[in-house]
Length: 286
Image 1: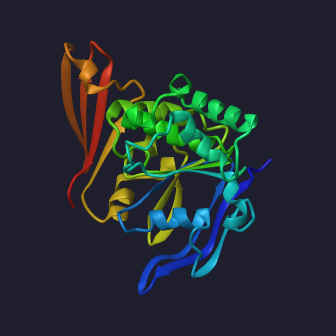
Image 2 (image 1 turned 90 degrees about the vertical axis):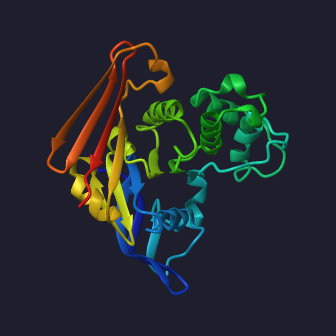
């Protein structure tokens, strides 16, 4: 049986007054796809997300979510915004934040099913033991996981994440990597990111956005393609599944190696005693 179509853009144009952002964008994503949206700043990634959420309407063409207009399917999307800032004095607990994901489904007083959904979502992200802790007391990585729990509490079929690794350290990135792997067979995941390491580690499709939109299977993404998309010098960091935080590598033996593959320079830094490994892949300047 063919997978069900989840997201479809058909000849979509979008422009702000006098500024074209997307032109003739046509692509499809399917049930259980794990897609990464990549592209330069100003290339249209955020606009693409807002069109999917129904917060913007195309100038031409159509956007459909599960075969319907985005506004009719918004409740089927769990959105995780890029974490920026919040008022640390606002008296809200971790559980309160997760419960916010139920507001659109059930305005007014929460019922037992809402608390159960919020608690289950916190358990999914590994934070059930912190549900009564003030949100302000958490680390950046923990706050990001709470925001994912808020999205999951709504019971979505699509999980849309905007720059989930922004403002978190390497250890938190590793936790997020493992967490998102768990949702591969349960949800369609669309991840907007500048971290090209996610392209290799997680996704089966790459949505390249730079005014136009092209979707490629991950295996077809090449360094030349990425450099053409970004229009210049590119650095990509790939994190191995056994990556440990740098601080955990103290006391071990570091081994560095460099090799050149055409225009690609691969640098490995290993700590044999702690299992630490980091791989940096750099595309040389044109």
